[in-house]
Amino acid sequence: MHTHRPTDCALLFAIPLTKREFFADSKDDSGKEYARLFRTQLAGFSDEEVWARYENVVLEPATSVMEFAAAHGVLTRSRATAEVWGDTVREKQVVSLVAHWHAAGFSSEMIKNLPGVMSDIKAAQGPAGRAMNQALAVKRINVADAEDLAIILNEFLCSTLIIPDRPQPGLEWVTNDPEQILVRNFDVVRMEFTHWQLRPAGMELADGIYSVAEMVSTFSSEYNGTLDLRMCHSVILGEAIKRAAPRCRIVMNQYPIRPLVQLPLYKLVLGMLEKGNYDFAGAVMALHKAIMERLQ
Amino acid sequence: MSRLEEILAPYEVLGELGRGKAFDRSYLRSALATASRQSAIAFWLAVTAQVGVFLLATWFAVKNATNPRVLGLILFGGCGGVGASCFAVARLWKDKVATDLTLALVSSLDAAAAVTVLNVVLESFRGGRKSGQGARKRHADG
Image 1 (cartoon, chains in turn green, yellow):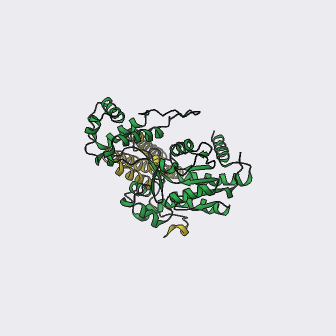
Image 2 (image 1 turned 180 degrees about the horizontal axis):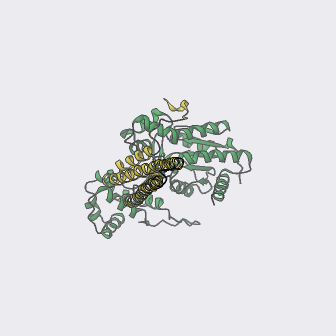
Image 3 (image 1 turned 90 degrees about the vertical axis):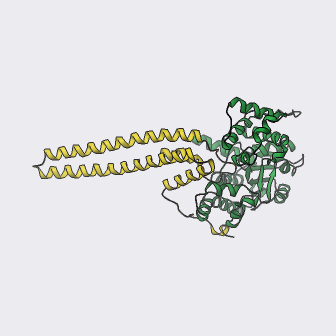
């Protein structure tokens, strides 16, 4: 087992950390989602009020942890692109990435932009189309509302795999996380309904949204470093990397996460690495165990 | 935290690094309707208690009308009790109105607009919109 020190670590931020970056990313044609979602969800607020909220819940924790990390010898980078990610993974033993996960699934806007969606599903012969048709038939309603249709389709796509996983020799994978199931099923839907031009799930870096396959291509099968994926549902990307590079260690999470909580925890992990005899993943697990014990 | 805040807190925009909580209209309708009923009961109980304190104080005052010292104490105590319960009644009324309004909006707006409204309600509940505090300017601009 390696022992890691803060100087073995890198901390990358792909989310916007300046006002200019935030508002540039929040534009509809930016190709980004994180800032745009943040802005859209606070549509009733002025730009200054939105920025004030972003400062409080994202920028302040991010700036604080970057300064702390840099002071302890961690390599820090903001506005991380795919190239920065690839270079850093080759340079440092432990790479933490704070980024936005672009989720799979339907939204009401997507449904509204697919006027023939119901007829396409009813006429489909492939496994995804037939499964969705059956799911809609079970509901026994004529779904005319885009929001309701998106909810029903997403609920179905989260439930069971349309096409079961192929076995991998020597390993047994248990896919039971609803978001993982959603991503797998959504990929099947995308392949079957190519004319819908659905975007895959992926990670938002500073230079765009990258699919899981594109992110995984950074790693050779011999990669044996540690990755710390600080984004929502990072088990999806983490599992894919682990399949491609089985010798690596990955710290990942199944549920949504917030910078306000995650980034102070990262500081505590660095403190443990500095004083103790931990590898990074071990420090994270020990910290979470201590928190759970304290909460009981 | 009030019941309304508890119900709305999961929809607060806090920069989650993913899609965020899915808007669940049926849960919100049900939870807000229950909260509305509970706040209505609490409000009317508070009003009843306030009226009761007032009537009790009046009765004791009349009974002790010839004793100025006791009368003074009763009026002072009665005014204090009624005044304090006024604050409670006003707060409960504000809670009830906010809950009923939120329920009406959640039922009629589309998901995106509803999430915005929920954040506006949360913000106003927490003492109005403030500008960012303690933000580090070094990374803030440019």
